Image 1 (cartoon, rainbow, N blue to C red):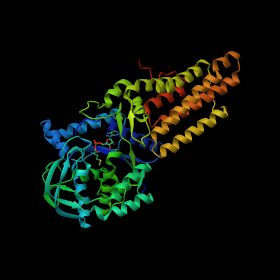
Image 2 (cartoon, rainbow, N blue to C red):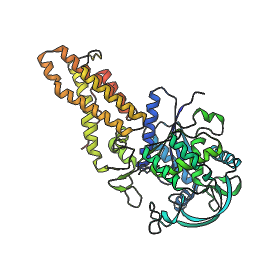
Image 3 (cartoon, rainbow, N blue to C red):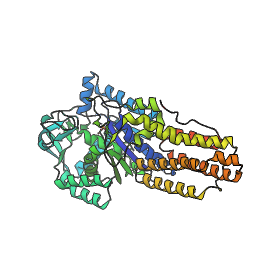
Image 4 (tube, rainbow, N blue to C red):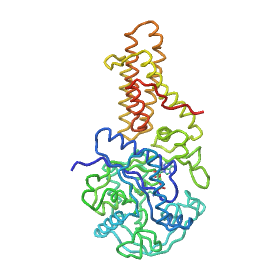
Length: 477
Ligand code: ME8
């Protein structure tokens, strides 16, 4: 079977409208998917919404609407913003869809068949914000450090999953690279958690009705994280055997705060159910905005729509990915977006394109790729090789840096060669070489930018081909 390159994003909680963090992950996955499509691979990109659980139920209650009506509105919000941001997903999975519910029940049937489910009393502290049980040592002054709320004491009968049966095997697979977690620091964090030891986790809830009924005992619902993780299979048609056209996933893109669920719980469930493990997890860092964690209470949530309105779709995609390496946590300097837009897009990429197309048309030169400056040709090749090496490793920020360096090199070449002076001196042969070099280099630059800024790159390439002068990124004042 000819397997497609299968890439996933987390499914986002249908509790509020999408923010910049969600946009960051989804644009990242879209760029990787586009890059692989360009290489003529069959690609499948899955995203969606996580629609069950206590958090969703509480948000719906607060809005005084039925949970289903509430999540319908939220899912539509996500779909609309992804359309605007030019995200080309192949399926949008919602955990309230009947096919997802059937897939969850089938996977759990297989887990049960393996003898990995048992019933026990549970008493613990549940954080609705995290949708997980916390231990006393997780708390700071009695509160969840992420949500600053006191977790609720919960005492109920639950069905447990024998996680402990699989932790050694998972650690072995992570160490051998069979389950690759990148970057390495994130793999080490996961190995640290495994080393410290983990207890079995509860895969059902007794007192929460907004969820998928557990077949074993329909008074219980499936724990929302177990429900959610199975989206990566239900979204490609599991349990129909055709899911193997896509599975195992080539890469699952997630934020660092959910790595324990993806790198430990998820592989354990799959091992228990006899389903292959994903090949790779790419765990990106989380960002703060102007130095602060984004949160409703701080009122600093950035709505991607505001950026799209100000900068346009492609520039927003660019600004999101060009803040800092996804391999670490960092700060989004939202107050510097205007400057970055003007410096890199308007004065960098846009200005280079305008200069080159203007000179080509004014001096009536037809670029000839066989007569280009070997020094610049070598520099273009070196930068484009580096770009590809980065993209293969999902290093999007680093790949963009190589395009910025290429643009700077080409702009510098214009200053060095001064084509207007060559024209004045009547040296047509040199003029032909310099402009051919610039046209070819600029063409390569915008080809490299296609997965990041599909529309603007296509406009630029068309302008170069037709000899049209284009103002690609008007300056913002
Ligand atoms: O965790 N920086 O959903 P969620 C970068 N439903 N990325 C960020 C971010 C930030 N500050 N904030 C959020 C859930 N993200 C579960 C997932 S998957 C089976 C279930 C991104 O709505 C990042 O990808 O809280 C993070 O992992 C995800 O949004 C969490 O989205």
